[in-house]
Image 1 (cartoon, rainbow, N blue to C red):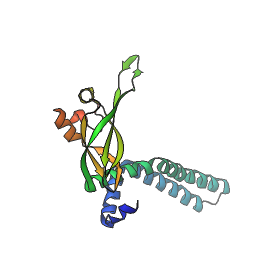
Image 2 (cartoon, helix red, strand yellow; image 1 turned 90 degrees about the vertical axis):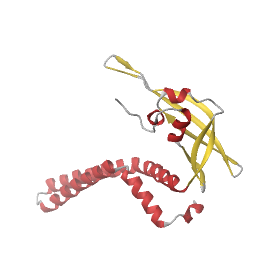
Image 3 (cartoon, rainbow, N blue to C red; image 1 turned 60 degrees about the vertical axis):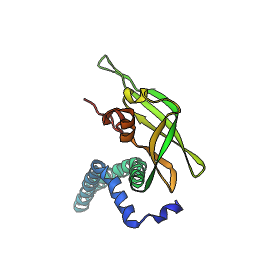
Image 4 (cartoon, rainbow, N blue to C red; image 1 turned 180 degrees about the vertical axis):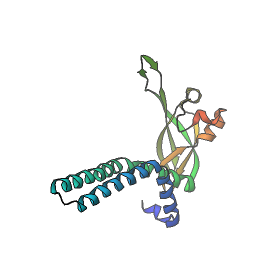
Length: 192
């Protein structure tokens, strides 16, 4: 983390804003729950009846507590992911990784007595930087992309020079090299 001190404060703030922007709905939900909880507690302070007052205090506090727990449980790792992604986007270096592992995860299920097949295709890779070997892993969600890759193939990646263990595949370049359209290497699954 010491090597990240060279990043200007204004860039760090910009990366934090980008990470929060990816969680707009969660932040809005938090604010709504927080506001409802505060209103219930305020109404509780204006009522003179003791049992109703304590009920509103507890119920309002529960609204706030639930959302604080939910946000505290889900947000830190997700914010860190988007922060690091923005950091790599600006300060990352381009390189090539060598595929070391290919795996298929079966997430198929039955819905209304109809079998739905869903597979996630995992790709593990390694790369060298300053005489050290680093590893990464990512998923593609289309069989067409996965089938064109083999162990030992090189894939384009981007990594953070100051923290090389943080790396991401360059998905658009990967699709171009495999002669596929962009949606075949997309990071997000699109449902028709």
